[in-house]
Amino acid sequence: MVLEVFEVGPCQSSYQMGFLIGRRFSDLIMSRLSTDLILQNQLLPWARTPESCPLMEALGRSNRHKFPEYWDELVGMADGSGAPFLEVPLLIMLINFRKEILPFLPSPELVIECSDVLVVDESMAIAAHNEDNIDTLLGRTYLVRATLPNQITFIAYTYAGELPSCAFGLNSSGLAFTLNAVPPSKDEIVFGGIGRNFVSRNLLEAASMSDAMDRIRSSEVSVGHSYNLVDARLRKILNVETASRGRLSVHEVGADPFFHANMYLHLPATQVHDENSISRQNRAAMLPKRSKEDFLSVLGDMEDPKYPIFMTGPRLYTLCTVLMDLDRQTLSILQGNPKNGEISHVFSMLTSELLSA
Image (cartoon, rainbow, N blue to C red):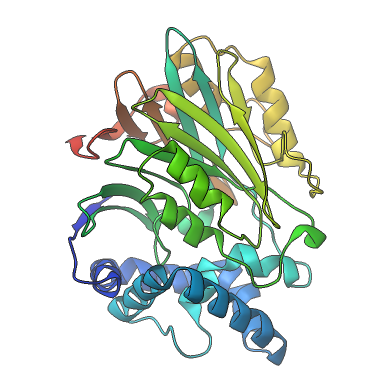
């Protein structure tokens, strides 16, 4: 399926931008809401119980207060798509806050996904990322290229019904990011804090690396995350691991290639043991990482039949791979196994313009 690029903006309001995105992708959003098994089997039954009310109200109150414009964008998207936002079961809200809700459910299915390999040395500066997710999200993503009233333009890989972007994005300030989920234990999670989708939406407007760091530091997150910040103008990559209650740790990527799956690597935090992530981390450590082609081969590795780095089902899939080349100042999206080099889109990292598709 072709990954569509939707151009939107400048808009008169955040609501209008969300409405236009929701209207354009209404079919994909409604398809995702009806087939997402985590939503249908876990989040939705829970949301129909009285026990859900305190957490749902707390999430709505804190995120609407801190990021009213993104809340309006989400309401606009729901209205544009025809999905029920302001009535039970609040489907759009549930998928945007799934990471903040699932730890409080009995026996939740916690999907841990995505792998990154990063390097900055004299010969190359590369960030490469596998975007992994569950099977029901195959074909239910799109690219939003938005121009904001302040003339900042961003590109964001977006899951149907969610804010741009809980995957990867870049803006016309030369600032880009990829994301890795991490599995903090339940006692690390703040009830009703700021959602990760709202934090990454905010990062799309960062004017610089330091601005992005300020936005992460002030985010008051409910659940921790791993951010790979990429500055095309400074030729700089940071891995930033975060946890609730204002904790974070920063690793500047250098000449030693840095692989990150889905466990905390340098921030002391209590986390859930994830065999999938540990296996990918160990496998990547064994593979050569001397060139751009090596990096793509690492992300395309399927040697471990149970926990491959490149995922082909039946439950988890690698939906696409993104390659950021800071010397060429391009962001390329690859379909299929990245070893094969099948590029579907190329964007400028300085202007976010589509160079080829």
